[in-house]
Structure formats: structure tokens, C-alpha cells
Image (tube, rainbow, N blue to C red):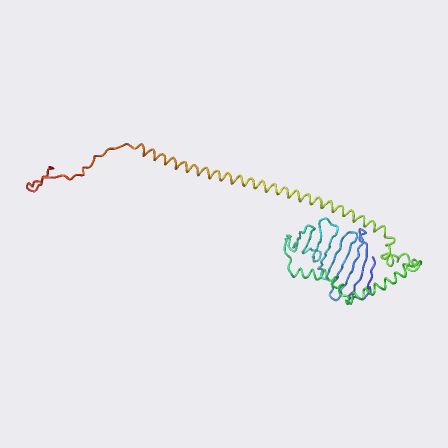
Length: 299
């Protein structure tokens, strides 16, 4: 690891540049700001060999935000995690195909949600704090750090380009002082191992993504086949229902037709009855009264 910046022992705000090899020999470059006044730390980092860049924020209370962007990942474009005391609270993922997921992990069951405006503002302010700081050329911490970097670079250029630099800095101090600005010297092999590790990870990630995409396509095909089968089954059900309704309707119609035919036949087969013709002419009667009785005879 090497660092350039205000490295005084007194605890005060400081901005520094840092380079280091991680456990897998992947080279990481960082710009770090320790804000002792507010007990916060900010970091902007770059893993050039791995095709990744990131930002980090941490508070003394245990809340931290990690954001990483990928230029060589075949699936993932950006990933962000908000956590408290190593417990993840929220995750955000942005994919190359345009999909975005924001997941609330604060409860036991992960839930897809829309982040609140307060949370968005908090994350944006903390994650892009250093970017805003560097955009201000009058920032006190930035000016002081750039001054320190200039002094260190001047010393390195005078020392490491000298034919007697080993005598002047000693073998043990060569990497700390000279190699970050030359060829990283004796750590060249480790860096090559780190690059090989990154390439292996990339190949594994590519294979995993290809398998994931194949599984997604298979699931989509199966879902489409299931949908078509259900649609066909539904159509068959509706067809059977309509056929049954049609059959009942036809049966009712046939029944009405049969009843109509029966009434028609019944009417046609009724026996013909003759009734006496009524005499519509007026008759003439001759009546004779005998005592209390009256006797009439038709003339």
C-alpha cells in the first residue's frame, strides 16, 4: 500500500490518495477523505484491471453505502447497497438491458419498492460527496492534498530517476516511494496474478450469465407454452359451453315446434259436430186464458 496526502498523527480532516493490492492481488486506487468533525469517511475507488469503479460512505454509527459500476460485466451495470452494522437495508441493481430493481430488505421478506425521496437525496449526497468536493478548486482539503502530492511527486522524480535511488531510499522502501509511479517493481508478478484472477472471474461470470439467460429463455418458452395450453383449454371449455347452450336452445325450439305441430294436428283431427240451425224468423202465437192459466199455440 502507498498513500499520498496529509498523514499527520493529529486527528483532523484529511484527504489522501491510496494504492494497494487486495487479497487477490487486484490493484485498487482510491481517493479517501476522513471527516473527523462529522465522524464520516468517503472513498472513491477504481479497479482498472477488473473494469469496475466504486464509491463508499461510512459513518461512525455503522451506517454505510457502497456503490459500484461495471464496464465489462455482461449483465450488471450498477449495484448499490445500504446497510447498518453489516445488515443490508436496501439494494439497488441496474442492468444493461434497462431493468432496475430497488429492494427493501429492512424486514424479513425482501420487497420491491420505489425509494423515498429522502433516501434518494441521502444516498446521492453521500455517494457523490467527493465528486462535488473535487469540482471545487477552492476546496481547502483538495488544495492541501494537491500541494502534498506535488511535493511527493517532486521528491519521487528526483529520487527514483537517480541512478543511486537504491542507496538513497533503500530496498525496503522502494515500493513505498518509487514503484507506484514506475513499474511497481518487485510486485509485477503479483499484479499479473491479479489480472489473471480477474480474467478467470470474468470468464466465470460470462458463463454464469449465459446460463442465466438460457434459463430465462427456457422459462419464457415454458410460460408461453403453458399460456397457449391454458388458452386452448379455455377455448375448448367455451366451445363446449356454447355447444351445450346451442343444444338446449335447439331442444327448446324443437319442443315448441313439436307442441305447435301437436296442437295443429289436434285441431285438424277434431270431430265435426252439426248443430241445428236456429230459426231466425219470428213465430206467431195464439194464446187463450182459462182461469189462472194461459195456453199459447204456434199458428
